Image (cartoon, rainbow, N blue to C red; front, side, top):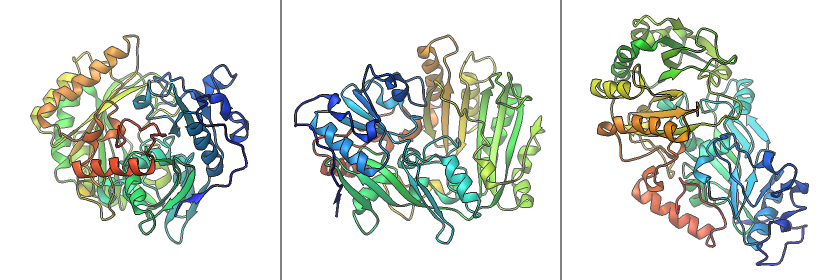
Length: 467
């Protein structure tokens, strides 16, 4: 049953509709417009978003979360939880009457080697989990960037380097701790409050403030992993061969192909900086001999750069060279059923040599395998009905965000003949919420959210049921 949090701070009278009533909560870590730290506090990782919430609060634990949620509701304000803010764009323009509840101060992390599980509070980053788990010979199903938050990415599904063999990260969740709209605390498991746990497995949130997750880890110490790269004049040849190779690749291998217009920045390898490349990153579970056999057809394409080696699991989190510092980016994606030669031609025309595209990169993530099968543990999102996820990411290089969006949409439009009606909402900022779920799952999410938050205290992310 929900547990009522202890209350030691007087709450404002109902109906005041005044963010000033939150002052003094969270040990004073509440920032209102005009406060010295407000502008710094409100900025997410994705700096494209310039949001001005009614207040920004940094709770240290679930007790402070509960007090902020109650005070916000009593003051006529909504609440929008946010960890890192990598996925902030869907909230743009919707926080003027909301408290942005930043969970970055909640950094408790426990790794249990005996049970192969972890418990991560809402501010924990994947890099923290990766490092801690590696010390005991384990790995988490982390995202491509170690700076992404565990809770937010897990609630959205979570496609990792291990997904083709082990499925979505959200399916690894065994318990979720949540502060609900009335300030009560729930620890949901398969046996207690199972509907909340079901919603947490890929439902993207919107039903409360998730303060911690518990999830399974994998017994992975090392993997055969690395990058192959060619000048982008070879894009059509490489992507055609890669698409054919993926049809028979074992589920132990997960790969990503990219058309990458590499910026000239010091944090990137010198042999890549300032160049236009076509690249393939991959992780093969197992020993080096088996891994080398699996990628041999790609090596036969004679890459200019080949970094494959047996590497510690902790290093895999840094394989994809994603930016670590806050950055202004636009991103959108499409799920596709296949990548035949005609699709390669269409994509190269839209984003390859001679296309005029200014996108930073276009990424093709290999799906299928365990990702295509409903997970044994039920959840709002338990598989992805597609063979590939194609993601376009751009920076404003002086042309304006409208031009960046147009470049990304040109990618999506070029693949329309092969695209799915479904979307992976964590990487599709403009997709309708219904497209992220099977029809029955979406309706169930709507019911759950209305049950636990009947007054709409929480700002539903674009991807959330009820949006």
